[in-house]
Image 1 (cartoon, helix red, strand yellow):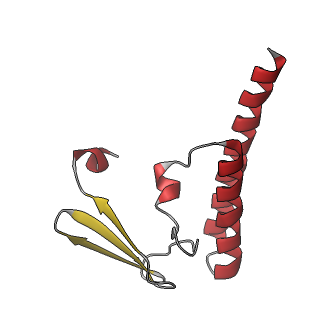
Image 2 (spheres, helix red, strand yellow; image 1 turned 60 degrees about the vertical axis):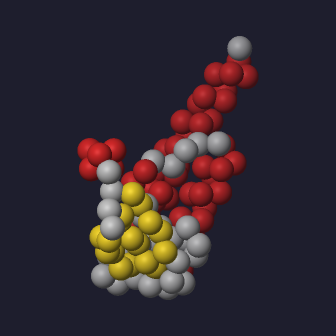
Amino acid sequence: MAKAEKGVSAKKIAQERVDILFERAKEARDEPELSARYVSLAREMAMKQRVRLAHYHRRSFCPSCHAYFIPGTNLRVRIQHGKIIYTCGICGAVTRIPLNKKTESR
């Protein structure tokens, strides 16, 4: 039983640290390398502890280069054909998110 309780608390701690790292990435907007490093660390921690990233965290960075998105600076947002299209200004990666009832309610 102690092992199961330990695992749950480790995941909770990992989730808190992931949230802290994303906050730090948001604060370090002026330093793109530092914010990308924070995002990379948060992703590594989440993957290692098998913690899911919240949808607002998943959409706040580039899946290719891990740059923290700042709309208008390194992110272009378009709505076309029922999809939200994020284009990274650093690496040019494109992320398409369907625009349907599920995403509108979030």
